Amino acid sequence: MDREATHRTDAPDPTEAPSPDHTGTPAAVSAPARVAADGEPISYDELALTTRNHGLPLEALRYDVTPPGLHYVLVHYDIPDAHADDWTLSVGGLVKSPLTLHMAALRSLPAVTHRVTMECAGNGRARLTPRPVSQPWLVEAVGTAEWTGVPLQALLDAAGVRPGAVEAVFTGADHGIERGVEQDYRRSLPLAPLPPDVLVAYAMNGQPLPPQHGYPLRLVVPGWYGMAHVKWLRDITLVDAPFTGFQQAVAYRFRQDADDPGEPVTRILPRALLVPPGFPDFMSRTRVLRPGPVRVEGRAWSGFAPVARVEVTTDDGASWHEAELAPPDGHSTAWRRWEYAWMPTPGDHVLSARATDEHGRTQPLTQPWNRGGFGNNLVQRVPVHCPAG
Image (cartoon, rainbow, N blue to C red; front, side, top):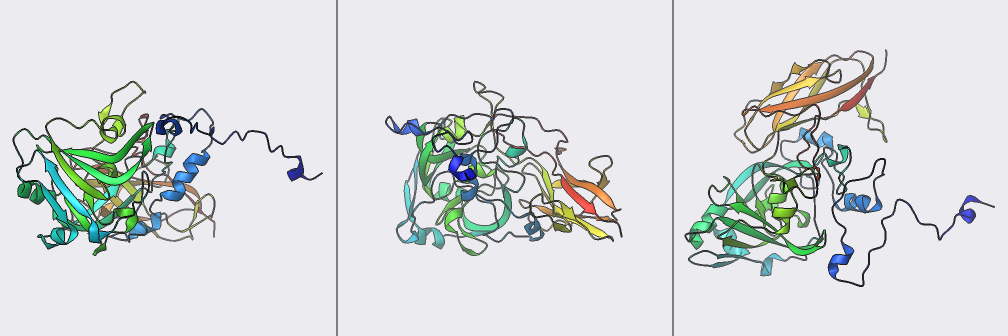
C-alpha cells in the first residue's frame, strides 16, 4: 500500500491552527497575541502573511532609491479598492476651518519631496527566542523611496489648529480585525512637537503611489517605524487627549508580558545591513566567494540621528574594523552607503556590520527581547564560504 493511501485524512495537522468559531461576534475569528512555544515551527498563518508581505532583496541595497516593487511591504488588512477620482481627505476635529480636499486640490498645493528610509517595526522578529507569532521578518523589512506630497503642517495651518489640540489622529481606509478588535487602521502623532518633515504623500519615486504603498494618499513620517506611515489616508482629526486606539495603545508597544503597559514604539533604532557578497546557495543563502579582493558594502540608518560610524567584522565578532562612510548627500532622512575592503582567506567566515548614530546609539550584539518583537536591530550575520584555490 502506498504512503498516500495510508495517510489518515481525519488526523489533525499539528502545524495548523484550530478553526475559528464563526458563530459569535467578528472577534471570534481573531486570536490573541502570543509567543511561540519552544520548538514550535512557523505556522500556516504566518506563512500566509509572508505571501502578502515581502522584504527587500538584500542585493537591492545597492540602489540609492529602492524601486517600488523591491521596497518592503506590510499590509495589515486588505488593499482597499481606492480611486483617485473620488478620493477625499478630511481635516477636522479641533480646527477652526474643517477641510475636505479632493486629490486635484492636494496636487495643486506647493509640493515637497523627501528621500526617506522606512523600516517595519517588526523587522528581525523571527530571530527572537521565543518567537512572537506574527509576520516573521528576518532583516529585510526596509526600503528607501522619494516621497512627494504636501507637508502636513501646511494642511494644519490651512485648517487652523484650535487651542487644546494635542494630537492628530490619522485614519486609513483599510479595515479588519486584530486580536479581537474590529477597526480601521488608525495612528496618531503629537502636535507639540510635531515630528519634522511629515508628508501627506501622493507619489513614490516620481510616480503615483502603487496600490500596496497606499494609493492614492498616505502619510510619511521620516525617522519613525513604518506603523506610523498610515496608508490609504482619508481622515485627519485633531483631538484634545492622547489617542488610545488599538494600533497606538495596544499594538506597537515595547512590553515584556501581556500585562505590561509598555512603552510606545516610535523612532527607528540604528541598523546597518550589508549586500551579501559572492553568490548564494539557493536554500541556505550561504554565500560563495571566489578568491581575491572583496568590497563589502551596504547601507546604514537611524531614526534618531545621522549615522556616525559603521564597523564590520569578518570573523563573527572576534574583531571589528571601521568601514568608510560615503559623504553626506543632503538626504538626512535616508540611509547612508558604506564599504570595507576585505581579502578573504579560504574557509568559512561570518560577516556582520554595526551602525552607531551621532547620539551614541549602536546596534546590540545580543538582542533584548520584547513580546511584540519590535525594534530588533541585532546585527545581521552573513555566512560566507571561500574555497581554496
